[in-house]
Amino acid sequence: SSLSSMKLTEEGKQIPVGNGGTVADRYQWTQSYTETSVILPLPKGTRGKDLDVELQSQSISIRFKQGDKKTVLEGALVHRIQKNESTWSLEGGTL
Image (cartoon, rainbow, N blue to C red; front, side, top):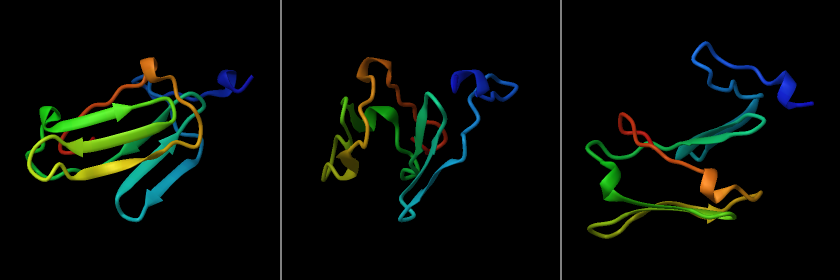
């Protein structure tokens, strides 16, 4: 099966299977057999509570809560995701 050939780092994180890329210098993404990660740079000083992140089964939306409520990323997903198994984190200015 494809899961049996999954490769992990020493920390137990999945190693991407060669899928991924950069979209218009806005964000990067990688994909493994069971996980997709989107790396999105944000303005310095951005905190998790500054963002409204909505992960739906077929779409994603990331906006600032205050000010002009600027949309950071929004769109339809190519494939369905498990909404209840999806997470996001903000570390070092990157979502």
